[in-house]
Length: 114
Length: 111
Image 1: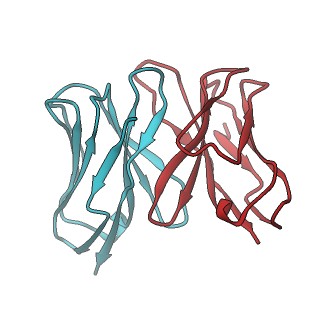
Image 2: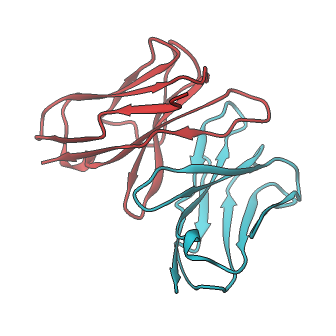
Image 3: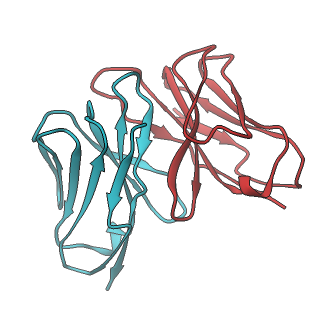
């Protein structure tokens, strides 16, 4: 099993450009998350999803949109990139309930907005 | 909203010494999870604590969940260079499994 796969791994954008980050998981997890990680700021939740067709805002949702059309995929979109969105983005997934609710993370996407 | 705070933010440890990092939540947690992120890597799950006062050990790592289920600690004995990284605690909100992470403790080991 591949686990959680993020695409792309690196990207440089110009201010105002748009892009979509793709997250795919093959563990049949109900929950999926998008986090951003900045130096000294830990992991901050952008958006999350508790199931196919549902999304919800996290701590820092402004400037981002998400979609979960299929259970295994969670897309993060930046409509008009800003330098403040330069960060490392992590996708994660987990089961909904039960003993094993730990989150599995992807390898991350390093995004630079110039 | 729920906040999860970790102290210290940085921990410089001499190889062979022990240290403890602490996690405090503003609300009661259904469970607490700990993750480790190596430099340049992604967070990897270490352990989950569910019961009030629970203590779990993984080799040199000891995890504890507070009686009130609002705080937790990670104690590492005889620190090794392989312990370098950032340790995060995370607490799911009672409604759903929205994981809120603490700011992390970055551990640097001096050989």
